[in-house]
Image 1: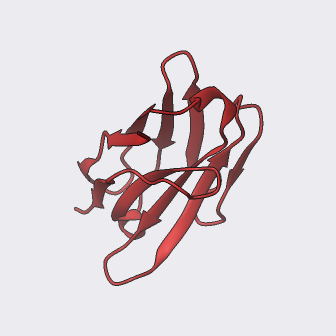
Image 2 (image 1 turned 60 degrees about the horizontal axis):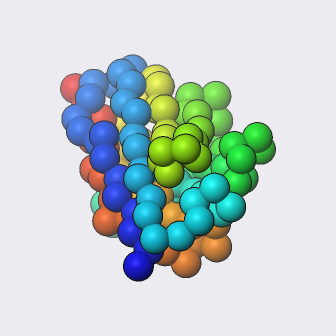
Image 3 (image 1 turned 120 degrees about the vertical axis):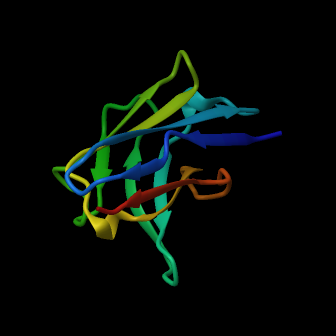
Length: 114
């Protein structure tokens, strides 16, 4: 059974940082591209970032480029999202998802507010 469990969300002030983690099980994590996707209240899902299977190639949405960094530790079956210089508009439920968006975790809430 594929499982993706996100953690690391919370409330932070504008300009702050958080690091999200996604622990994977039930599939060969090291062979799968992975994504972070977020959904703000009242809005549709927004793709945030992707990593290829070995972490050597990464992509970012324009809204987070230069502030967020995706990485992975294949030995730990874990995907990360380092989020710096957070803005109120980054407030959302953040999900990790497999490469084709076939499987999603339950999400972790990030709230950026003063």
